[in-house]
Amino acid sequence: MKLRSPLTTPAVRFASSVCLAAALVQGAAAGQSAPAAPRPPVASTLRHSPYLPVNLSQHAKTYYGMMKGIDNLSVRSTASGNLIRFSYRVTDPVAAHLLGEKTATAYLYGQTSHAVLEIPVMDKVGPLRQTGPLEPGQEYWMVFSNKGGPIKAGERVDVFVGSLHIDGLIVE
Image (cartoon, rainbow, N blue to C red; front, side, top):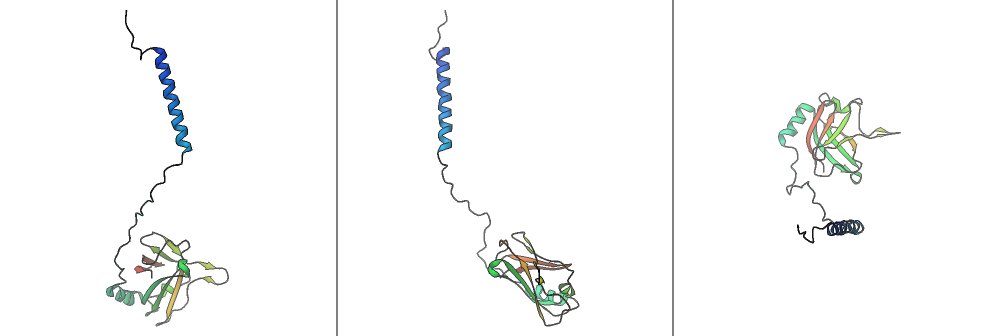
């Protein structure tokens, strides 16, 4: 005759499985009703440099003045950050003719945020940019919509107007 251990009898195994199932159900119910422990705030993956950004080099300023016909380039955040104004002075109207064309589409690209901004078109005013024949020594501007603020002050941006590219400007 074979002796059975008291823990291996069918009645004991059934009772232990019922207890185990009840403990699992009770633990799941308690886990759902209890609020989750607050998580610590996730640190931002973007790190800001402690160094001040450097504006255009003298070589870049000379290049844009000689080859593109513009100087005094600036990009500023205006209207509480909802608009970004790109302004420039024309030195050679023939070289800078793309900036005055109505058909040339203008974009502003943020290098860090990868946001592409366009010039807004108002119903009664039209596009928020100056177009027409350019005059030497005259300052011109164009405004880009920055709704939601994807581009912040201090970020490097590129301006594209048709085939004209102006790279590495810093938003002030």
